[in-house]
Image 1: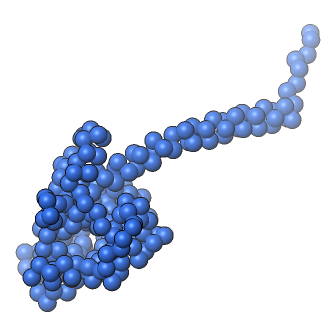
Image 2 (image 1 turned 180 degrees about the vertical axis):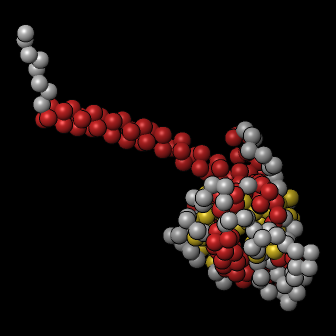
Length: 240
């Protein structure tokens, strides 16, 4: 009986190497071809989140063309520095907070020359990940209009609940200034707000099992508001 040819180890390794190389080339090609579309989807998602916290859209089933048109019609952008001074020649959407931490983009909801709300990006370390989001303030630059967290890697069912509507809705109507006009931000507490809670206007219910995530959000949201405060203070002064 004729013996079967033996498949050598060298052949097996060579075949595996060729398959691996072909798959790598295909994946790299696909990533390159899809990069522009992926970048467009990221920018579309960011603009949706800005429109959402500004109260201009309520769900994510808006057609991309209509969403972009709404953004162009209703949102005006500015960039300021840490002293609250306007920075010319810089596009707000192009500012990378990690690369240019001293450039502060601002997205406003406007009707004619009237600014109805202000939206600013906020990001920082939570428990497991860097969380990115936006917070919007009413024209008084004190009352929270909305907040969203669109990028994070927190634990699903625990810290991952920060992107859920039930959690973000709790921020609406809260205030960031105390009676002396100082930034106190909005604090995510441990547990629920009690009936006799002190200063409940600055607090929201925490997420069960996600205390450390909440502490991280508290730190970077307040740091963001403090960074923008020189500009906010100048606007409040002009409005008074």
